[in-house]
Image (cartoon, rainbow, N blue to C red; front, side):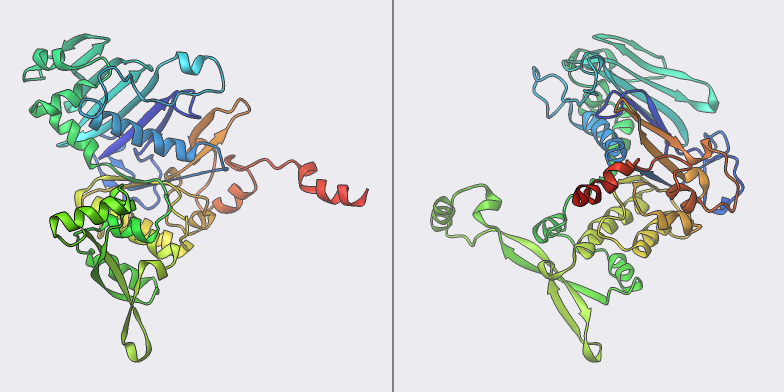
Length: 422
């Protein structure tokens, strides 16, 4: 369960910004909150939706989560020893590239709050830390400054040995998990449970590859049927992998097939059944499906996985290629204890203001990004602004009362007309 996430000096996020999923004291829609004794109010939010103008930094927040996850999972095993730390500092002033990037997060393991974070330069991890809060009392599990480590007595295992194996450009948690450290493997597993979608184009091949060798979750088909897509079933087929997919030339592709005497390798393809006349099913391949249907297949697969695991899911541009009611239906999966009994959480960016008028979201589940005049992103919740229950949040947002909307110069909007009249 995610309690909060913080980041600084990453892409457009210069100053430290924090996203909190701890529920406020608001009395609305309390039946949808997730019980959490470690949170100040005793509950956390099942969903957060982030609004903001184009280029205001919404996607960069999702990227920051993904970057932190990737560093934890791969710094020890995938990075070159002398390759430094691949990061993306704020570059609209001289201080960004010279200053470390910071990532930190609070989450639960077996009901206990843990706080983990690190700071990274271009060449190394400058610091790293992990604290646990059983019964709200902070316990230091480890602290790292450069190549110096301090371990708390509550952290068992071969800590000093693993510290010696930790490179300057790898995280101690990553090295510990690779060396079978029982306690820190739980932290590693939490990051592995995080899922996300950055709104890449879901074309035919990408959708098929994502589901290669897998049966499509029946709940996905049920969902598609309930939102009136006309889709009632699916079937798996096979398609030959091309030389492009294998990264080799056609000549080598043919030669290998002759030498081995084997059939060309194949991948699984998905065809969706649409209800036709007399309710007969007609199967269409992914190439013939809409961009919205292909996107829904990917989003729903991620959503049901998160719901099954009680894990956090980050989706960039939830509304991309989706009708408002489809996006709302995905959101409802997380905002209902019936469909979300394990406490999964959805963090999504969107431009769809209809969701603000749906009465599905609490006011503390609405956040905004604002790009300041110096190009830096500011992240803040609607609850930082004085509102009342029953306010028309969508209207207020579109009128610019809460920020997070583009400023359009009136001279720009009328410039073409003026030019035409001269």
